[in-house]
Image (tube, rainbow, N blue to C red):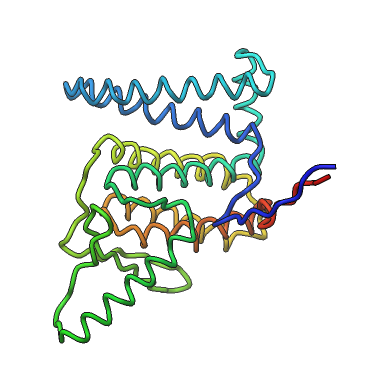
Length: 270
């Protein structure tokens, strides 16, 4: 018998298979490789070297995952090909890349807390409530910037849902205030990963998605596009977390029947 203990699981902790991890790492390496080429072509050798280092670290992680799964490097192409034909694996890849986008975005602007942890949204809601109260008490007029989140000044990004003829058109409204960019290389990675996640969805996952889930796949497509626009617009942390935790993750779970890690993890005891 083993010991039992309870561990709270935050946000959408999906059970991830090794194939999904490997395919995710390959997509990340592809993104960093694109950034290496782009920076070399623009004679930005310093940035190219940083992304080359990132690619090397990801390659080491990839090799480690292959070794842990007792698979040879020669199996890589087969694993990647098999993963591209499995909707569960691809859905997990989308979830993984989206989480990595949040991590890189948080690092780029030195947000100071984990954007992938949904529990942090409660704290941000309280901060916004306090901000509203302070604005009322001081009789502030006009549009005010969001409060400072750690070392970053947030940008207020509103999303308008205009439904015309059954088709939803999303438009982003961004205030003039912007986040303070601390690590541009992390921001570049976040940007390139938004392209990668949309490619994975449009080219591989969506064509294999259940026909009866067309409405939800349309919704997922829109929210992945919203995420990309939010990254480009340097949107506030809470905006990104709302798109990911409230929209993208639940929709992925519903369409592709992703399994969550149990909120209470039981371990046996003597």
